[in-house]
Length: 255
Length: 332
Image (cartoon, each protein chain N blue to C red):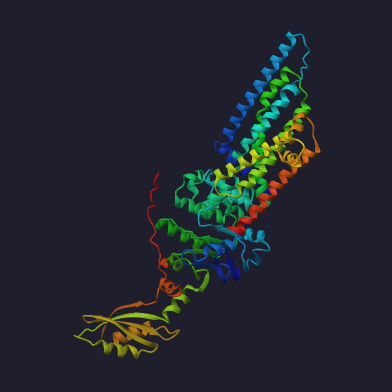
């Protein structure tokens, strides 16, 4: 546990001394801010319109702002993941520092867990900054905080799963660009799998839809914790980290 | 302290290390010698648990590298061929990180960092970014990293590679000063380094063990027993070399005298002594008492280099490479 923490701190440090973390945080804040502004404006307009036409408009912030906001952002933010994970192991392999880690009295699982945890924490800090937007929502309206919290939980779980997959891919090469590109491709695939749901019927379509990362975030965004989705993400995290550990171990046998 | 038995490492098509066995006693400095690609790095990586052996066993301080890697790792300090440094870290930060990885913490670690920095002469760059350091400093930071937790065994892969001559000397002195409390294995393809630093030599070539012995014994083995070069000058006119040779042959303890060359009145002989006989004193007296001048009397012992070439079949790559004193400027 101590070793995991040491490695995690070291990784967090190298995210934050390099421009990586700041660029990610900025880009993320801008995109989130844009969506937030867009949805609030839209909400405002439709409210006004409905009033002018004399219809009653169900003014529900959760339904009209938070849910689409989380739905869109959790997909867009997937594409930040390669930028976070690509260097984790590829860099260590390229510079040879992996030899330091591998010859220190530290278990492989501790190394993997530490690095993944650092990536998750960086991601969580990105989510934390979106709170600035939500402060406005809470000060001028009264949305229900519980579905919001569940939505963020789902979002973080989804990211944690994909970060584990990205970490695994980073162990496969010593080239960061390759690690990033492959991770990007895998994430893209896992996202578009969800479109198979539109085909309905077929077993394969259903399997693909189940495998998609994004389809499992939907119920979270609604504020519902479905055990099916929870299990999906938790097993994705375990699978990713397990493969990472095996891959790290196999480096020794292959190299 | 270190015991290697029938160690073999196979890659897909090649055998990098082929049934090597040797032992290293506590407190010794052992030179691991061989041409490039002989299997030195592979053997070291096995000893540090970075690579598993294909066959055979290796134990460090009684712990098997396959069975109890964590116990082995706790007891070794390792400096790979290129020092494992994080360029974005400051030197002291880096040493702290490595120290923590090796299980140290708190004030003990703090004072140890200062101690190690002084010892490796990097105290003046402690708050600099590693990425900004020169090659010599980086190498020494690498060495500091290896000794930070005061390990019983130090494994250094070409610790002087890429340093300038002054830095090489400093590094050698540092390594020598570490002997005693630490058992050290250092690999190199530079022979004088072994002669100057090590007590024991393990020579490997193409993955096979060629010789393992003390430096003196190896020199002895190739050059026979005590071997002396004598230059004698006759004082009165021409003196036939034969006369001198006959006289030298009668000196007790001499096994054979070989005439080498003669210039003007001076003749040079190579004189071999019997085993375990020290013949220099008697030789000098014999020459002087015969009324000749003794111009020179020096050890004819072969250098390790000759031994090495002899043992590895005279490969050119085994010759020490001239080390660049000035680093090449990288092209942008």
